[in-house]
Image 1: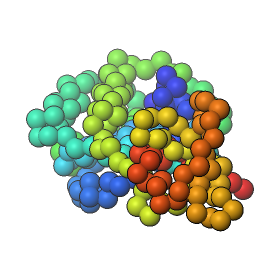
Image 2 (image 1 turned 180 degrees about the horizontal axis):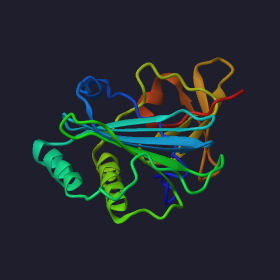
Image 3 (image 1 turned 180 degrees about the vertical axis):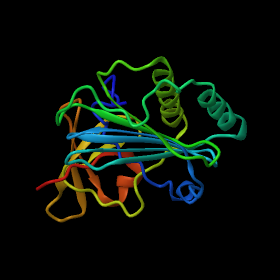
Length: 219
């Protein structure tokens, strides 16, 4: 669920460079949780081959896409935890108790042993049955695994600085791109957390900054 700010804000981090992992998504889903409202969307999916996927988006922002791989024992442990939950008293399909554009609604799609898909729908502020609450907690643990184990990546291949981009320097300090210099050979940036303006040669951007943290869309 989009809770505890980590979800509610849908942190707009763009994580790229994981195409090799993306090619491994070739089997079916075990469980998928899809949560969202008018401001954004977050999806966590476990696939049969042990791939965990996180997809997030926020209105007017670039999305976030991350993948992590479970080992055979880790995969089986998650599947066993899901099997142990008693969902017999949970209304298939279900509905959110509250509605509105800003009310976060979640759906969990559960498939085990290639059987039919079970669907559970609920809102962020709903009172959940014990079984559904525990299943939701298992998916939270999957999300935490992704956060802890998704491969670290650098700037996207072929990256060119654009106004509004937020870059993390190698020491972790964040800077926002103001624009290119008049001769187009340099990049002007300003510190996010400290009033510091710096100029970097375009060819030095990749070696100076380790990641693109946010890309703002201008309209």
